[in-house]
Amino acid sequence: MSKLRGFYLVMSIIGAIVPMFFLYGGLRDGGALPGLLAAWSVNGAGTGLMWDIFIAAFVFAVFAISECIARRDYFPLVALPVTVMIGFSSGLPLYLFLRTRSKD
Image (cartoon, rainbow, N blue to C red; front, side, top):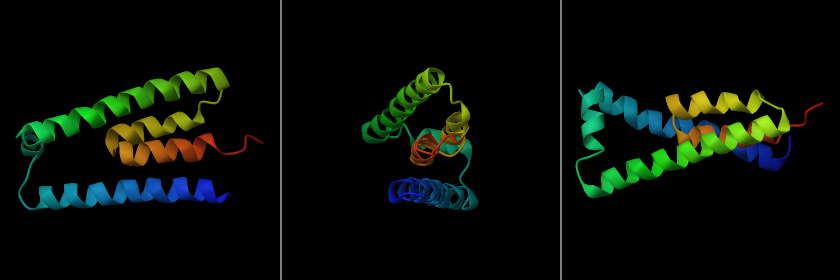
């Protein structure tokens, strides 16, 4: 495995662990999903950040699908459910890790 692929894999793992640490900590402390959704719109900065991440993840999904269709290599698309269920910080590096593998 190249150093770049290793970097992608490590960043995908970190991108899953760090956000989940804070998310589950907040939920454990009495927070709930409605509270999380409300926190995203508590002020303009939070709302702007939410839309920034949402738009970037949407563009990533369109790019990943179109590239996988063009290359006829659909396995990297497993990164899309990761992006939705965990987050963009894990899904994008996972996609790059899978996309840069050799297709022997």
